[in-house]
Length: 71
Image (cartoon, rainbow, N blue to C red; front, side):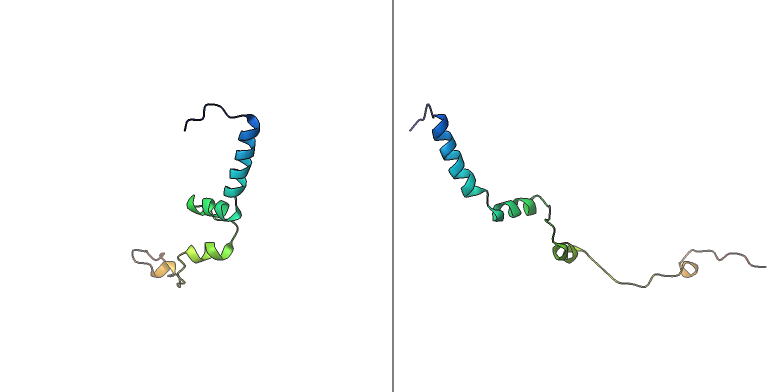
């Protein structure tokens, strides 16, 4: 079936119906997530971080560090 012509009213009616069927909160959130963007959700951001708690090595004990000369 080939549609050659559609009136403005028919287009607007069909567009409105499709728009409200597809633009949902769930689809918007999925779109952000698929693009790698995260809506404001600190727990989700923190869960993706690779956090390792460690004690820093003092500068004087680092390998290759020369201690300052003291008379």
